[in-house]
Length: 442
Image (tube, rainbow, N blue to C red; front, side):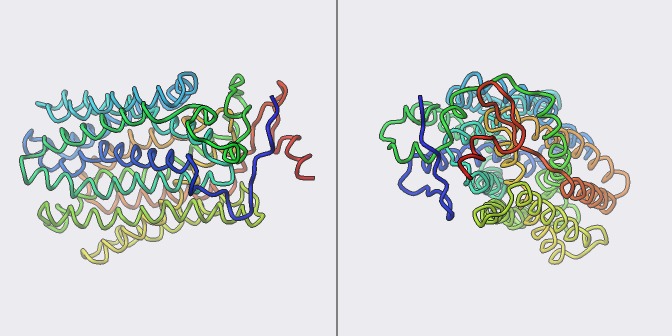
């Protein structure tokens, strides 16, 4: 079966009036719900620790319980989802994480909380790699950065809304109600996804031939040659390290912001929830801007690798500089502004980190993105535990200083890495721009 050459106009392929626009909106809801479910515990943590008598180190262990299976199963989850297809995989994943969230609300102590968070990490491990696979089928290649920016902006919106939602539920009936309510959101999304989404765009009701021509080639969407593990590791491992540096600092924001604001400045739950939301809203803007900037550079004839790399360096470096006032120690206003700016710059990176696996390995985007996101998962295991131990030992300044060091190391690696595209054409692995595309370009 022959297919027309994908369309890639200079201004970027449109979403309005296309079924892929609805796919992107549905994935935005999934990303937002997933981050509400994984970060609602941060706002509830002061109440949970008070009820069960936990110290900061124990609280860090509970938060890290999510990340251990999340880190270990990234690649495996991405590979399984490619075999099952994103429709079936995301339905099962979302139902399981809804059960895990419900279980958190019924927890009676350390081990039940730990087990519930571990199950949540187990289920969400494959969620974003699977969603990336869905996008690789439905999103034109010239809009990879934009699409990743939009869905991760939705995730950060979930981050930002979680403190206010959880605080409201705690005010109504205690911290357990917050987990019961967010579990219902997960179940509802799973039902909608199952009945509406289709793995193959050509099977979607009402799709036009014009839209199909704008999508990646059928061979990329419909076939999955054996994974070239050695070459993929060579291309993706530096990105995994950058993702670790990014993830370390992101977990600091997602885990410790409410505790930092309440313990350092003596804020009540309503106040620290509001400040947390204001800081995290900066990430909503950063995610969209980061994806749009790199795509804009590409649309104007820039090199894809250089575009992604430039935004990563700017984002990591800017986040580092804005965290320095926290190392010195500042009042509430300066600390809030510094944290908001740091989070904005940090989130410039997110869309580009997730776009790179789609750029590098379009035929194995689930596996490649899982490989990349293993760095984030490992950071999620280490960051809450080490950060909690350092807080207990020396206060907040040393943990923030360590975050600056890791951001600097990630920026250096991002500057020097040069991931190349991997594709299989007629059974032959090609590294770099495929010959067929070189011929079309000439």
